[in-house]
Length: 398
Image (cartoon, rainbow, N blue to C red):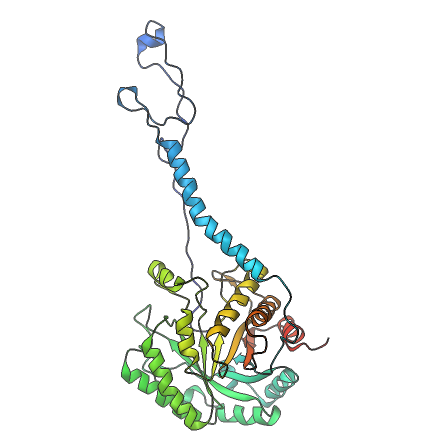
């Protein structure tokens, strides 16, 4: 999302030390007398690969071959799991989706801050309504923040919210306009919103109460990076749900991806300090506390469309397994185009994502009614993105 993306590692190599995997020099005389032919004849060369640098007393070390074997073993240990994972994802992308696995008319799109700060006009709303016509989009997540690090939200952050809500309701009846709120969390850096601070959580709840009074049809939260198992986050959701229930509007959240392998978030956290994934158990705990949960199923670092699509299929299945049927589950589609660490635009495409979503839905719960996709993000979308969404998911034009 807008708050935090990308990361990576680099590798380097150093020249090999003498005798470590290098071929030994040819035998040569050890003293002038031997050079003149008066000394003993030189010893025959040691068979290739059996020695490195000479040791005291003419002894040779026999570790280079073992070193090479050890290095090869380490490479295999590292590469084989990656190869196996790649094969599994490619297999996951195979097959045909079930008939009828198309939009349930519960899709959503994230909209940028320009819609509430005065940059958009009535003509823009008219064009948006035309764009949304005959699609499956029901919810607009309109960026109305970000929250301050203390949980407050100045009204100056969304000066044109009332105008937007009224204009959308006129131009596109039935479309809900939700306030998209978020902030960077102080989970990996000292700067950010501290969920452990009870006063900050109280301020977030009050900010939500105030922005809903503006007329928004729901509250959508994107707090990142949010570590798996954060009990303070669950407490915040419990408090927020009381506010949204009282206002008779949905509580919605953007969710991290689920561990593709058991406890992978713990391993990633220990190695990098950035867990990235949530456990499936924690995902379910969040899903049971909200009305709508949208998985940010992009920024996966997958190099190929087939691997990305297989990954999305797996994520869809994992999310369906623990999301209550009463909660809307939405899978994110990449309506943006960047190539950097963590995201390859040529791999993370809308067609690959939609096919993955349909395959996961087909295999796990093909008849799930409260299900959809969420498009990220309006200001970066291309005509090709919209065409793929309409053709492959809305099933329009066939």
